[in-house]
Image (cartoon, rainbow, N blue to C red; front, side):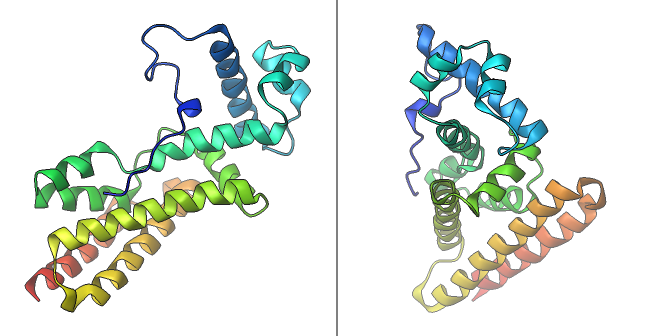
Length: 215
């Protein structure tokens, strides 16, 4: 499966830090947590460095020693929060065990987009910023390409064979498009997207997978 390696600087406080974070890491974490809250409430461009410094209880000069600019704070948050969308261990385990039901379950969850650990307001800001910042766009594209590669591998495991490669590719694009649409609806109108509609979309994809397997 595609190896999407997390930037070690974007780890959360409890991740891989059993010996205790340094003061610099604690300070950096305070800045990122404060900035994320402010970005969620006010947006990237309506939040200044001085406000982030006050909210995180870090001097402006010290903040600039940790982050060269506000864009670097934005990038650090984007790198960390976009990890929310990285393929998780469920798919890796299902592929290793050749667990077809597990692979299908992962595809269904990918389409449904029911859970995210990241504030959806921050996600909206990230996607908006991707249209303005090549650095942010590159991170978002990396995540997109990683999921696409994992979907290809999942479908190849479920329905192998060169003869249906083109149809698998089309199904990958269909799944990516449906998932993007579901995600956007959950982002902007969460109360208007019923589970019955999402289940219908998932069922349609599963039927297409069945058709590939039968061929």
